[in-house]
Length: 157
Image 1: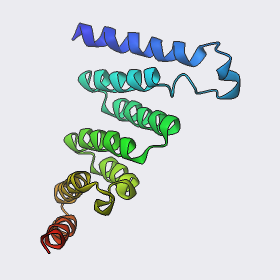
Image 2 (image 1 turned 135 degrees about the horizontal axis):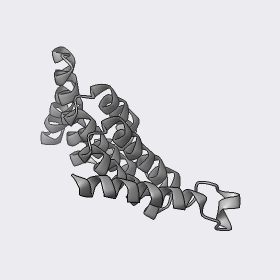
Image 3 (image 1 turned 120 degrees about the vertical axis):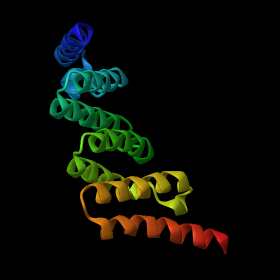
Image 4 (image 1 turned 120 degrees about the horizontal axis):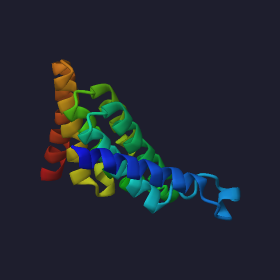
């Protein structure tokens, strides 16, 4: 317990240090260091520690900031979709289906099976179905599963 509180303080101090850094690039792109790979890694670790310390709302915010950092740096929808799926899973595990659904909707264009992302599409359909089911929308929970079944049927032809 004490170790997680200490880790939380250290990570927050590290993030503050990144934000206050006097690098020349900071005059051009003020969030450059926070959106770096180091910043993203620190934000994800901070989110994990906050979860362990029972601070879900802050944790999910840190994880979403890590997603934003990755996307602002790489503009790669596939990598973003992977991280978004992880954060959506964390949200679902805490019963926060609204956040999970919002994150999944953001990645829907990045997981098209026709682009060779069949596994990602399967995960997307399963997660979306689970969110609908856990929120009590049982009819809507079948729709993503039917979409995946249609893909499987099409591939058999």
